[in-house]
Length: 368
Image 1 (spheres, helix red, strand yellow):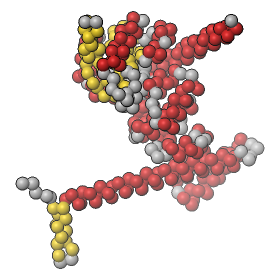
Image 2 (cartoon, one colour; image 1 turned 90 degrees about the vertical axis):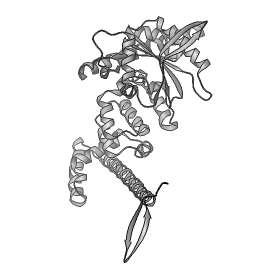
Image 3 (spheres, helix red, strand yellow; image 1 turned 120 degrees about the horizontal axis):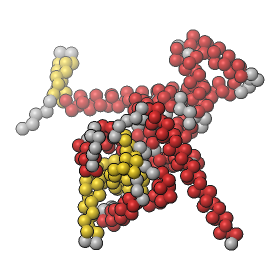
Image 4 (cartoon, one colour; image 1 turned 120 degrees about the vertical axis):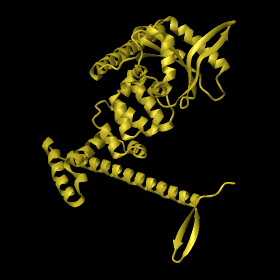
């Protein structure tokens, strides 16, 4: 027979028996109330800092000299520190101004401060690319990253490794707006290139089966590198097509995309023939595994080396297929940064070239 844990509390000269369940429930209520209060205070302070920054900017615009804005910040800071303490020091006041400059729309700030603290925004302010800054802010809001996690994502160049960074800015902003306004994810926010698999500790020479086995041995680290939302489903998924056995290396499910994700592991450089194989797997999954309410399955082909021009010519995105390079050793950050920037520039150039060709073909067709 189970016994309830109790506590005996003294009330004057008498004692009352209090169940452990009651004590734990009250503790939980107190903790929740404190958390709610802290969140509200943080949101109010962050909004205050934005409004102070906005007000200083408005005042600065009235001046005729650039030095006028600098003088305002210095003078205002001295006065505020005397009255309200070091939180309003010159350095922090300049951050408030920068905050209002980089996040000019109040309605967006209001939506972000429900999840992001002032320290989160301080981590975002040094980012030069507005699209990059918006990407981290939105994903931080949706996924509830800590400040430490946010800084780690920035250091690992997560934005530069997503397919979103390779798209035209107008299209990328549209996908971020959809995430912000509808909480609806696009595949380009999920898939990365490259994937850093240095944790697998592979030997200098390995096979596709060795790579798969290493991933399964450290599936938790692999899922972390893939990104949040992925759930492992199966390895060597068997498919019988026209009486022949086919085996998909790895099968995952992504909760936010509501899609199965088929993963094929390849050694060496990407080959055009991989497209047909993956298309076959995706159509089989669509027919035999897709549940009502789910979107069509997506494919990810992981290769030791990409082939951007081949990938662009095949227009794999139209088939629901992504290609990602995997790195078994993490290169120096400056090397990775240079390669990523070169890759982004090449991808955008190929996309623009394809768009220009399509536009010329449309005009020619219209003339005829």
